[in-house]
Length: 489
Image 1 (cartoon, helix red, strand yellow):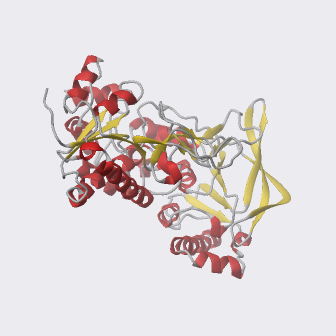
Image 2: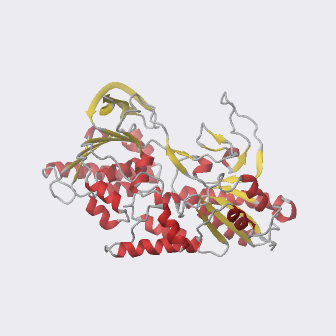
Image 3: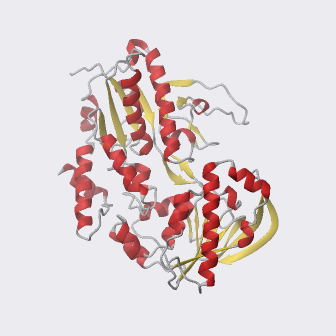
């Protein structure tokens, strides 16, 4: 048995939250470790249930985001660190338990992300042709256990949601397959599926007004450049009162978003004036309607299938409060996609805060608690913190915020972890089993074969080689068995 004196940290989830937290922990330890009596040496073992790392960046964001390559490259550089050990294809709760981790690690950090949709909750939500965004995103991103085919027979479709995922879904439904293939790493089944997509009319419904949407400027700019697509807006939606304009101007990102939406309004006017064309002036064969202040209230069906959607006009005050008008309109559609939020994953043995949709943690500081903070009646309840257990990213705060929020979270949680470790006995080194190879023996005894960083590099090299054959930078492998074969070759 080889004992080491380094701090030992287990991180569950190798998406952005897990990787950033690992990097920040090592950096902060080098900076503050001596002062805190912890030393500066640590080993971080990063466990990921999928055969490959990067989570949301690889499997939760549309493939045509130009920033993906940059973020994935930065995450990969972080993983190429001798103090970070990648264990892909190892599922927490199935291949290794919480008690087994606590025996071997001084602290366990959950960065488990989100994989499920929040339910739509409208009459007709169970009709054939109603889809949650998460499963559709899994399909077009080639998620290892996702669908391999997707029904794209609907000529008229609706997308519900006022955030970036809704924009991603709408954009992919309006995409030209050849254009998408040329600029992304989509696998063949996704290319063939989008090539056969019959959607010619899309309605995006946003419950609140122009100034209350949650789109990033980048998403809007990608929406502006869809070949063959005419953007159509309702000019009345842009008649903002002075209070709303003033409120939107207080926040830089909101102000930039609203300015970009006004640019889109002008584009839409030009597209119509020029004879129903796309952004390049070519005849458009698809129409993309953007409806603000529009709250879907029912999905309409016949014979168990979607035939339309009923929408109520709303009004939104400057402070973002929405009120209903009692005015309804129906639109013929044969498919409805809802992107109204994700539900972060649960973790075996960890309490879950159903009300806020995240792992139970104290006052949002990332320290895992024995129960959610509020009791059944919604009143605040005193909660006990569970030592050595932490959460970060969406597991900590719920499904809100982008990469910037994830980095801020990581710094906060790492600060709390270091503070707690410094107070623990023997400079935070509390795990009974300090043999770094103990986890490998445990997994081997169960027939679990982790994919390490070198294994991931083999998969990545194959994907790059396959892409090069078609003049592309990358082409995703989607079969988990093929990934394993490549990694272990």
